[in-house]
Amino acid sequence: MGEKLFSAEAVQLAWEVLKTQIPFAIWETFYVTVLSTALAIVIGLPLGVLLVAGDKNGVLPLPKPIMSVLNVIINLLRSVPFLILMIMVFPLSRAIVGTTVGTKAVIVPLVIAAFPFVARLVEGSLREVNPNIIEAAQSMGATPLQIICKVMLPESVPSLISNATIAITTILGYSAMSGIIGGGGLGMIAINYGYYRYKYLTMIVAVILLIIMVQIFQSVGTYLATKSDKRLKK
Image (cartoon, rainbow, N blue to C red; front, side):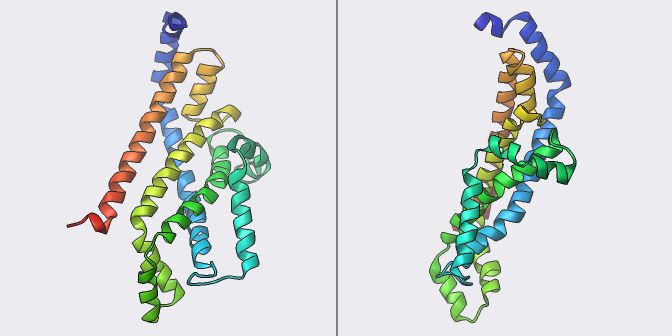
């Protein structure tokens, strides 16, 4: 196995892929991950706020049937495995971007898979806010919207950034899986040039690059969360 892994042919293929395919694959993975995360946050952040503010003890209680339906939808989407979800949303991908394969097509299932996850992360962050601060804002006559925008969200910024980091690294993993159905990026390199051709050295290179990207995203997210935490400032 070791001899085949580092055979002259395997090393040559890995080097050729590294020179010709990897730079663009890294860009595709970065582009898809960041764009999908941004779109998932645009959808998931308001939903997460709604899950907390619309609760019976929240600042803007909503009818129980509405909250129940919202929770069921989020739970259902979160429970579907990503590979199955990608196949299920083929018609939607074709309707939005005109194709079911390639980098652009992968963004649709990535966003659908990620926004319920983001909504739950946002919900968790907002529930960590000290209720005494919210009660103080209410006692001063702040409206629900003011409490959400000027109290709940600012107070939970460090937690929100940490959870956004979790989301972006999770989406990065999902984007790698998309190589199985024709998605681009490092996942496609690992599947097409490594797994299908039995050139496992190429697959290992792609996996190592994915790990490096995860570490970069994690380090940046941790730094930003630390810088935004008022409790750590002197």
